[in-house]
Image (tube, rainbow, N blue to C red; front, side, top):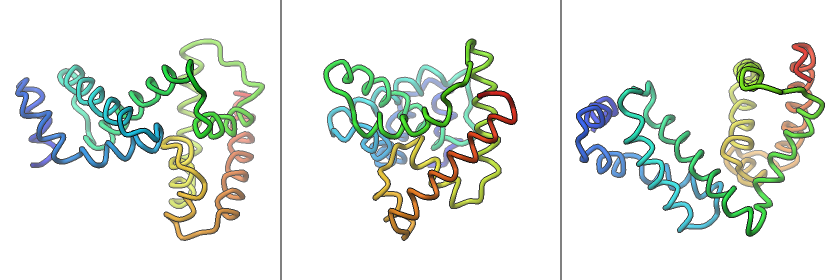
Length: 183
């Protein structure tokens, strides 16, 4: 079934929308959640929560790219589960990946929601200007929280190459944000 037809089912409040979403995107969304959570039960919970969030947000929201919209909802649900679980134990993968970016963004003065949005737009601007492979690596590492070895394997590159590329991108991001007085 085409994405637009699935979205129409959501707008009609037809429960078949969720079934069609599961059929078309279920494996993909499980992979997104599992990359973050590394636990099948938590991953299933995140995906189920994403289905509920999709149901609650359509209407009024009509996503342009359904797969990206669902991935974002799944990632958000997975991060919520990580936060909940972090009270019990800290996810090394999540904290390592985010600590890399934290070093880049340290010194910034983000005090309001508007500042956060502007910072997000500035980071998006930076990412948008990257060559395709670099953009892929950045998103795989900092959005999907893939390991360096997984990224290297996916791209057919060495881990040293990926580490070096990420380091250089973080340095250039820091320079980009300094020019805009974000840090």
